[in-house]
Amino acid sequence: MRVAYTLEQCWHRVPGGTAVAALELARALESRSGLELVGVAARHRNPPPERWRSPIEVRQLALPRIALYESWHYLRAPRVEAATGPIEVIHATGIVMPPRSRPVVLTVHDLAYLDYPELFTRQGLRFFRRALKLALEDASLVLCSSLATLERCRRAGFQDDRLRHVPLGVRAARARPEEIERVRRAYALPERFILWTGTVEPRKNLAGLVRAFSMLDGDASLVLVGPPGWNEDIERHLAELGTEKRDRVRLVGWVPSEDLEALYAAATVMCFPSLLEGFGFPVVEAMAQGTPVVTSLGTSTEELAGGGAGLLVDPREPEEIAAAISRVLGDSALAAQLGEAGLRRALDYTWERTAELVAGAYEEASRSFG
Image (cartoon, rainbow, N blue to C red; front, side, top):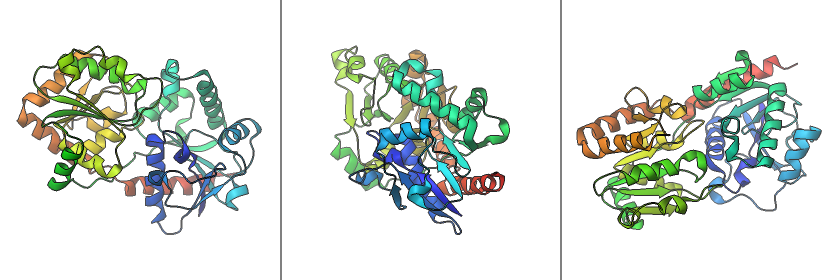
């Protein structure tokens, strides 16, 4: 089976988790016999940064990104076949909806713009709402990264028979002691620290995490790792801390992927109190290193860390976040218990399992096209 596989997000300013998911899934799908993926993107003069380069061939359509998105969403052209040649299925790996010349399998990570429209620009909301309208009309199957996303898609109007739960994976070997020590030196990490990773944007709730940190006793530091995103000024939140607490906050910024595993492993506790997630890569990546996790109730991360694999809190209550962090920092037995439980849970999330489910969706969509 030949599948057109959209990969335009690799050229976005902040590719983020959607690009990670698309690239890791492509690697896993490529190893399956009888399946050929052909990447599809807008016209670009240069390849994406090395970290975001595809394991599959990517063919470009004639239009640059903004023109392509507008043309796809309002003119329903050009067809992906203009770049790929004959295909049997289209996999839209992000919310952008290409024309339905063949059955469309759509991956939906979240519908955050429906729940938090105030966090998006007017132009962004117009784009997402148009994409959702087209998805409701044209997607043969909708692959949801979590049960929370599946339920949100159901409430947005998708019929149950089109929705599939397809959890994502993690590809993280346990960091070796020498790697942890190297990363500690490279980033001048303190002995005990609370780690957060992600793209800096409002729904990640860094404001709540900083307020929780302000309530903590003890000498643990707060280490924030990830690229700047949009509509969030982390320095404004940090300015509310007293001098002593502010001096114990490290803004590391973006780090190469080869350092992330050791950063997770070095952390005393990982805290990820996001308001809404489609899956929650940082949570499962931390658990894969045996690091205890504090994360949010009421979103997809509850599925990852529930049942004793982590401590769950209301992300809108900084006092709850602070209390959970304090429990882990002050109880080594609890920290070890959470670390072991999280490590076992992380073993359930593999890209091979994701690829198997996605390949099955391709077959199902191909049979149903008419």
